[in-house]
Length: 377
Ligand SMILES: NC(=O)c1ccc[n+]([C@@H]2O[C@H](COP(=O)([O-])OP(=O)(O)OC[C@H]3O[C@@H](n4cnc5c(N)ncnc54)[C@H](O)[C@@H]3O)[C@@H](O)[C@H]2O)c1
Ligand SMILES: O=C(O)C(=O)C[C@@H](O)[C@H](O)[C@H](O)COP(=O)(O)O
Ligand SMILES: [Zn+2]
Image 1 (cartoon, rainbow, N blue to C red):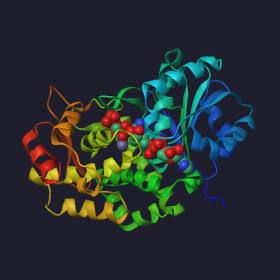
Image 2: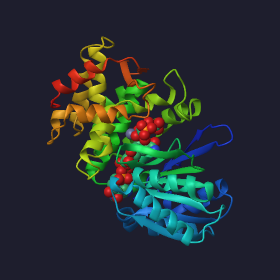
Image 3: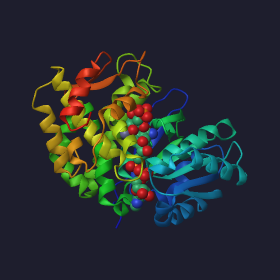
């Protein structure tokens, strides 16, 4: 049963590279007509993961062929974070070239953030840059990763440490495909909505009132979460596309990620901790660090953690079954891309809607926080 609300079109107003995020139900079946005006030719290579391809690739292929698209290849990678690797990247590049792509062939990512980040990096690199289309199929990818042009893979040293900025020509967020998403994945994606809520303010109030509906799969709540998240992200990215602003800018979208990425990397990308779950724990830790530094009300961490727990997300390090060593977490955080002149930089909160970056945080305070949360050493 499809929702017949007409699709919304949100602009991402980047000078010379402006594009739209189209949000609606049933977009996959109409994909060809929707993406053709944004592309140089009706020729694509689709990249997906094996699970998503089994569920949604046939609908997309029909939707593209109906509009006269030639599909040069439909390539799949194994589902999961481990596919954001150099070896999958290499195989994907070879397969794209073997499929006979040229510079007018668009790479279409059909999947979650893993497929979007990996295929986007391949699109940025193959023939030194191919047109790219994002068709996000997870809540996380619809509210966050498909918008803004960050692409990349993980290295042994940590998360997203190789990559490129490569903006898509268009994003199709078909909210109907979320009905097949496992509930753990829906909750993990919701962590980025809560992050956007804490950055934006009014959206945090909405989260506290409606988050439970969103993680239960309520279509109206999910549409609202996608629209408001993309609206916020589009504005932040348009103002500071490459995270260069000294005043916070795009780096604010990293709220919770300094801690989250370190925890995720320590877990080894084996599915035991999803990106959104790491972000949820990171949001709680960022709120706790903000209190330690006297920046916000002492009640904020409990408020953040209570909401995240209420929607079924882990909100504290101690909620995970495994233990972490302090030295390992600190070493991971020192490799974070926000580090400036060797100093850790954190996104902190004065309250919901009042985030900022701080680069003179005493590492001893961070260590004391992590120790009090159960890190060993
Ligand atoms: N580029 C960015 O700006 C950005 C932003 C946030 C996160 N990320 C990255 O995104 C990645 C996480 O993305 P994710 O949470 O989407 O994970 P994912 O891509 O691994 O997808 C999660 C799981 O859901 C399955 N799946 C996807 N869509 C489905 C559907 N409609 N029905 C059923 N199953 C479906 C996939 O097969 C996979 O097993 C991380 O690597 C993170 O670093 C990037
Ligand atoms: O788009 C951004 O900018 C973000 O920070 C969004 C994050 O949710 C996302 O996880 C991103 O990939 C993290 O960026 P990174 O630069 O720390 O790898
Ligand atoms: Zn993230």
